[in-house]
Length: 364
Image (cartoon, rainbow, N blue to C red; front, side):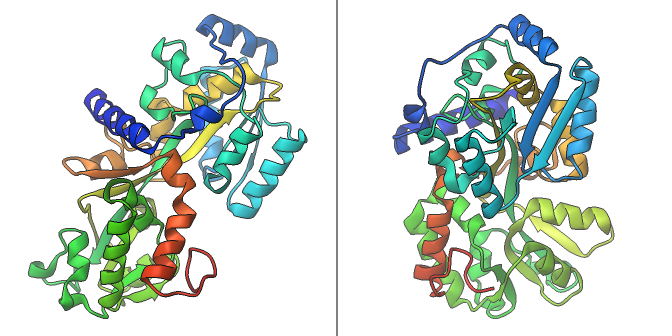
């Protein structure tokens, strides 16, 4: 895992130099660092944790149980789920108005800059504490604001039905989707977020050029990974060009005898997910820091991979996402890429695919 994180560190450092105008420049106030003893002492006094999360609700109780075993002095834990743009916007309003009682929360990528403009994060220097080993967190999971930890990733892949695809036509990468053999016979999701993730490595213009070629090959337009995977497994569609690894792994877990097969294209599109930060008005900030540390542990990542397979952070050795990316190039969509995701998706949907401008997801 160490070598993998070193590679990621170099990638993220290059991205930071190239993109500039980082969220770090938007943070306010003096950054705070604490020793592990100070964090534990504070958490002992608090004895409570409240957080908002975008993790799957089926996963969260297992994370909480493991966290309580690690820190039994945290007697009371409450959480609520925040999924989707409307819920994320409401959460943002509550945080900004001081109406939220959370200690840690997951900022939504669509409103990313607003959390910094409104100074909603406690100014704990998570990166500095990770470097000093006061928090046992891989530094590469901390974004360049130094206050946000990314706890999960998703991967964009190609999936085919082995019973419908001849051996000589098994796809090898993104270019395979442009093969005239597949004209009118392969599916593409009208929400092009996976292609937006590729912009981190390809750049927007190359992604747009690819998307136009994809359209010219007359794909079957679909909306929703689960529905597309179900139809592919049923033998209705031979090839899915761009789908979620975690949705596919969930399908394969339900049916180990499925005819679906996974291709990891070069580059594998990787998107950072489930970011966490400590709320600036947290009543239990030390417990929140311990929660962030726990989410970055191998134990928590194993729990995520068990209950939401494919969503564990891809650099942790042995996780499904880690196995998928072994020996492959990656296009890593981190904080600023995620913040621009909606804009890039809209460009793909409108400029490349000619959909009406009804949001980046294209027609329903």
